[in-house]
Image (cartoon, rainbow, N blue to C red; front, side, top):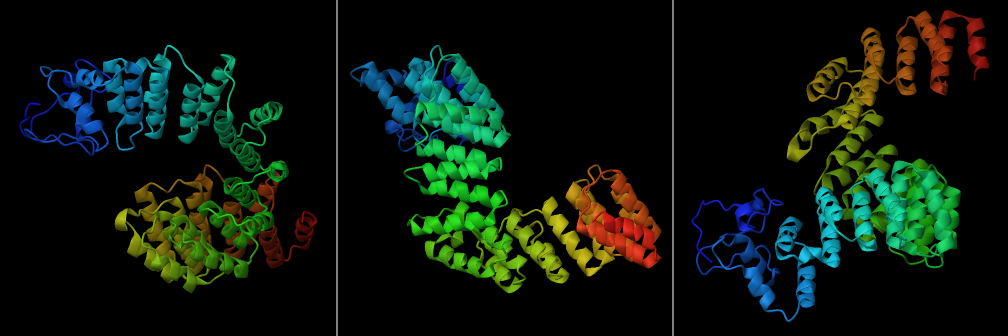
Length: 506
């Protein structure tokens, strides 16, 4: 190989003799080195002694190293097998191998193409995977399944379902991996009807006992709040793995059945299965919903025992649990001992102080950590810190935060607007609260309750009752907080008639 001068540019198109698939500077990717004479040029230590790399970096005048590579093989089948293993190399860029296989003609082998589609999907290069798929003269079930799994993995469920429908229309029968990915896509995009049809087909095909498919069905039904059906599938599984249990625990926790989630977690431990981080975060959420601090502390002990106290999502769930119970010392200890803090943990800690009326500590963390180590407040962070200003009644702090959310572009987010309405109302600035409320694009019951409470506390009470009547006329569902604020205004006005009318709606 010729020595390349330092600073010289090597054209990918020239190296591949006209191949246009790679027309961008891939040589700046990690792992590439262009060395001097008699030195090794490497893409990866596993790239078969640098043969592939030499092909990619060699000038046009050099003899094609690919021919030398193939000449060492006894037959084409052996060469194809070698390249297939090369494609699987984790540190190798799929785009590079793709171009190389096009040049050598090995891309026409369906197994090579299937493996490369899978590699593209793993590298989040779904466009390249689809392009290769479309150009394949023949496709097998692996081709279809790899592409469907890629779309599912990248949270593009509609594309996954469309690909699946095309596959079935062409006469391909799905396997357990295909069905598992499609079921996951059904749950993500809310296509329960399609999922139920697949469920029927799965029963007919006798695949219901497959753990991968059963877990997919459990996930689909639990996400769509059909917990009884999901539980029935779990109970009928002959061999339940930790993934199936965890899927059901997550479904119950998110579906408003915290007690069932806790019981399932206990069963999982009784069967000597190792919980995952998802199981821990879900059961801790259930402990918070059940107001079971004692059980939550026991789970915390098991988290430490199993070594999951180093997981960021588990630490955040523990912090949230203690903060909701007012144990801010334990929450702060978890926060301070965390080696890395993301915006979620940062937001939860601020929220914990806000919920417990510790506005000064909330502001302290907000100011210390804002913009530090790449942590930037999001809309939930701002909603929590504005709530702390509302709880403390500090209008100056609230005004400063209002200016900051305008500067950062979060001022028009619904829950930030709701927090601002609540802050101005609690600080006695009812006029500004009304202005923000009137300009809100999505008025929810929380913002309505905040404004009505502001009218009741700061007056005028007649305005509060008029606002309450407008909500009733708009057919908004009235919650106890709205009714309590309205009856308070009736009491102040000594309006017994309207008080009885409101009481009748309770």
